[in-house]
Image (cartoon, rainbow, N blue to C red; front, side, top):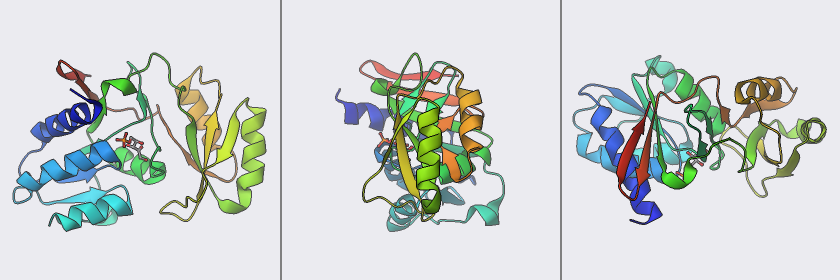
Length: 218
Ligand code: 5RP
């Protein structure tokens, strides 16, 4: 099994948790795309989907799946999305695709957050990948300096603007000893919209595509 097969297997395993009539929260990225493609087979049995990005909304619509606004729906029963890293406590780093803010909102508004990853995303400690931080453009320098003071090395993601019209700083080298504490600390820097640590609201379940099948972590 190659990596794409493992991503697909995890994504398709998440379909088993969808019940008739549900409105399904849908994430962003290549693994989430496999989930969207699999959702087509259930499209006549679900009430619609809420997307965490414009790209996923477009893919859902192309597949003929009804896309609803989170404001119309309120709470969602289920949300499936990928991640860049997942630890054994189901805490995540997300935002490789730059959709972290909307992803965090949809995760917060969902009763069950199923994270779908291939085995390369499993880590003992979060932070090997740069941590994405969404920043209001006029605060770029201020936030960069604040992140540097915390020990990080921020780099502006070149040529990228989020669905919310903001910038992404990808921060390497940040000492993430306590992910929930760091998540809160970063969110308190003026100009930060959101950061890619999902520790205060971790996943409820991680489905890991491995070379020997899909493992379920709860
Ligand atoms: C997008 C994300 C993605 O879920 C994350 O980057 C994983 O992407 P992929 O499934 O393509 O590896 O957080 O903002």
